[in-house]
Length: 625
Image (cartoon, rainbow, N blue to C red; front, side, top):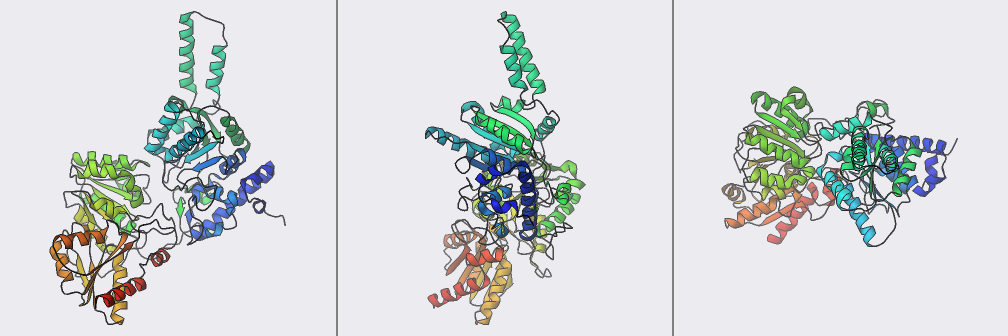
């Protein structure tokens, strides 16, 4: 049996020793490794499958790590990881203590930046190029941007700077797979579609210029005519006229699976002064039939059967599914309800809404700032927008939340999925800052449900308020509580789920089930504990807080947000402001970024497992008494 070619590749330098047949075989081996691994660990499958040949050819054309390769978003970089000495450990992908699902500088010298969000690669590349030139160093820089990242406004800002204001050498490789996470949207997507229909004009502009400038001297009028012909023909025939207008030299479109052509094109681009954009056309999910057929469903996968493609689903409804069902119910009742998302139609649960109410659904692409501004305009016109955006991505629109929504006190409902720890996606995707950055904004109401049933009630309540509202909830299965006899939602007030004499646990959102477990552990030690579902991070009813801490030895706040400026801080500020005296223990996430792993493993790491919380409470009680 022949030895796998992959076993011979411990660095990109070894790629240059392979012939064309071996390169094709290597691409197949890498795809098999990616599929096999993702079926066990989960991960971003379709995106990485589409760029295997592109990764191979780019590394063959360049000399990393001296030359710098920046991967935008980062979830396309699995083949890059495998080619840079990590194929033997690739089975640890996204596992606690194992390889990250994204490029990480601490993991490899070949990972230039810690990427995880879309759109930043050209800016990174431009900064690296300027530093290289200032320091009089000599190496190439290539950024690979795609999978919808070109719909991000910061990509245009960077191209404008690179093309017209700075003339540093930079290679931009546009991986055009016609997709974001869902299908691409907007005028730029349509523009790229038209380019794909015009192959064969890569060097037309240069050829026209060469022909016209080689003509003998002419009268001024004919010179102007010739220039006009050149410009008009170029605009009509050269597919990359938009990029050329931004000051970039455009090459393409070329096939993302023709490795010799990609290598040759990158080699030529290295010799051109100024920024060059190479337009490469790929297919998301390439090499795995099920993902080619359904690239959106196979963008981010949990464990799955690679033969059938059936993914492992947890029992019970997810918070996302409950939101999806509830927003459809509310939309049927209120024709003014409209929904907005940023390239996350499927992930946020708005897919069904988009099919039932297409005229009331808006996908703005990877442009959260636009999405929030759009919500403001819709609200100003009397509509009731709901903006469904993951916590980690909503950070990009903070200024719009403040200026366009809260300043004008507009009734926009922010549905914030993936709040708290998200698990295997790690530090770039955890959503543990939203309580801190939202509660500081005037007019904003911040809620977090303790169960799936409560999420539905909170959404209904949110649309009754005439102010900005954020409803945040975690990834995955919704917690279940007995919904019979639950207290109605009252602004700023929580709900007592369990009464006790010694300690009050005041828990926000996903920490409610954990608090109930802690109470059971403490009861076994003779410590009588109340459990309160906080419901609100803002506003907080001071009279309610005084009531639940009265007579208690200790009050403990539990949150899946960072402690700095979070829910516990809000409780402390409220109690201090009202001069309510109580021993307070705040439990939340530490002042650092947290890596990837299963949520239970991460909670253990940061001291938020039930056992650790109970231990801390017992030790604090011993100090008090």
